[in-house]
Image 1 (cartoon, rainbow, N blue to C red):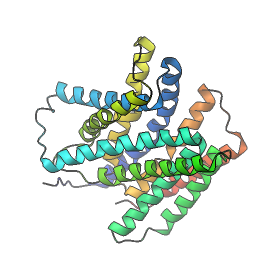
Image 2 (image 1 turned 90 degrees about the vertical axis):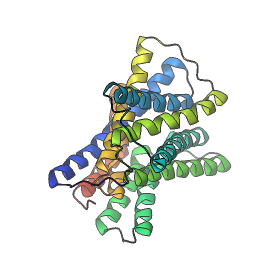
Image 3 (image 1 turned 135 degrees about the horizontal axis):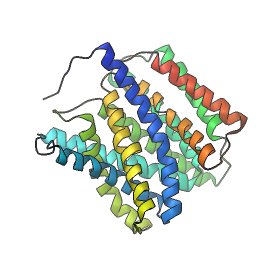
Length: 303
């Protein structure tokens, strides 16, 4: 049975802040992943698999400790939704890293983050039979321009690799867009955090064998490594997606996808502070444009 609830202006503001918080927390995931790779030598797919497994495992432990795991009542529809969300999470992460390996971080990030809101708004228009507002269309155009300035123009490479990498990035964008659309439709009485955690367990179990075949998953666990794994699984994964799914109760899916563009701004700021990566004038201009797009979105329509 579909779960319904009465929503107030206060809950709508809370949901909006939840999506904003998710975008900021996601921005810390890239830096944490880089630090983990540098420290352990793990491949990107292994880091992605551990991110999902640790994040999902932490949520499952919390559900078990609070007694909520034994009270969950999932029908066949709910189980199928969790498995599908987990598979999409694995697709989203693996396609993105494949795009990075085939082209560059700049091109993969530009295509993935730039295409996601467009795909979500297009799906809303087709499935919901409603035209996107002019504000949302302007916000999308502003965000794409800002992303282009923020990540820079990727260097030319082998045309075949660039084409294949772009296709992988579009697959990643489609995965994130599908997660956004599905996350807006709760099933049974499963809350946002259990939905995120249990689906990540499924996605991590799907991705781990692939990571083992492509680069190995063995890691030496010491204090700093464990701390990085726990943070990667908790903040930018379990907590961020829990907040994102919570916000999707009232924030329109197209708007939520645009607000998630706070991720590259956060990542760029952290890169400048921690890794001494400088944005430059074009990057700063791109960050301003993305901020403007987010502002247009947060003051625009909500579902």
